[in-house]
Length: 152
Image (cartoon, rainbow, N blue to C red):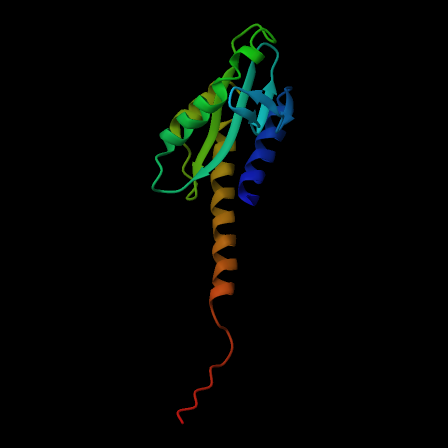
């Protein structure tokens, strides 16, 4: 959760620095209930709906990205007409090792919402959070004191 929120905040800040208005975690009524994308970026002529996710190694990055795009594409009619161009639905999909989904990266770069440097920073942050998680887990599951053995 901490890693996810760190990426979301980094992406939000970068989009705002590029002159966009960003709404974090807005609530929309969807056909099957409420939808809450991580970010809705209002650019000069286009809206981008972005959801951030971390996937494990057994889950292909491209599939995770596609699932997020499909999930939020149902909002197209609600957002259509608010800007001159069609709304875009994308994700920032990475695995726990810091690998970024190619489709995710291409779309965010193409929209001008992120730079190649930003992708590198996000990748490094992912690894840092992974190391932090490993350290916490290690402290919880290991014994660092002396073990006394009494054979009898």
